[in-house]
Image 1 (cartoon, rainbow, N blue to C red):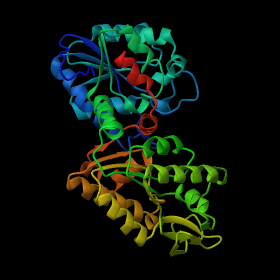
Image 2 (image 1 turned 180 degrees about the vertical axis):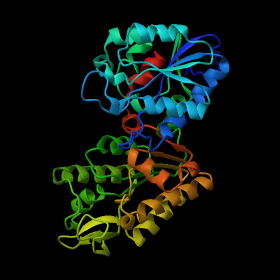
Image 3 (image 1 turned 90 degrees about the horizontal axis):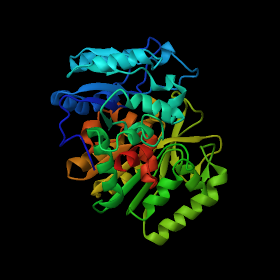
Length: 397
């Protein structure tokens, strides 16, 4: 892959597509700067080379065409200045001659951050005219935004066509692709996938693509109840996709045929309502009382899953094991995170992805103990499904 690592960009104006889609509170303050920090190695490498940088990103989902203060990248510009110790200019939202003039005047070591790309209707539509306009601002293009690599937007895929010889993977995007390729094609065994989250429907293609690759499949979170019910279990008022019961049976049969060991919860912490202060009890996962719902793993399930994880050489974790946002129902997700971290310490390769999974490892201060934490939820899922990502394909052309 053509990365920035072995190329010098001295004296060049470089367009860098970053993923600065960070959460903001009501005061428009950044509440989690992980994505910004993840982009720093690429930015710092280019600055060290002596390049002038034009950074591009989207933020949120603006409803109107044109500037909206709630979605401005102004807080990101200020935060970047603090992190880099370099002045960061911010363009207006018109994407016109004024921005072109700012880009033209940039000198080596200077940074221009373009306003939220989604203030232009051409971004999400993949408009070639908008892509050409963006391309006119620089002499080389670097994509470092894995979180949007599954979108064929003007700044992620179309723009690359304007740089047939000068388009590169940033350090972050390259790292994502290398690690995901390892999960799909070069994994050491035993290989365990831990899949959680609310719905089977959102993970069908991932499950199917992994069946022929993994040795063990641990299924937890809300989606586990669809499998438990498909096996004849009584799940009370737990989350269940009734229309996916035949599919769950089909997937389980396919795992059996391929020799994949399926692990489902054997006991659950159940509650009488969806609230942190609910009454709770631990029951067998196949026998949850009516009007009670499973919200977390029980101790027996945790012990079973830990044993599988600690015997693995490769571990993929996507999706929490329970309602970890609630203090009283986060034990299972925390325990699984700690088990993955311990397995990593003992030499396993671990990969964590998906918004909730990443939030969980960050909340528990475990991110640094994993081999690899993905910055892209949807993009990671699509890659694991075996789909081609437009933002990646465009650089490889």
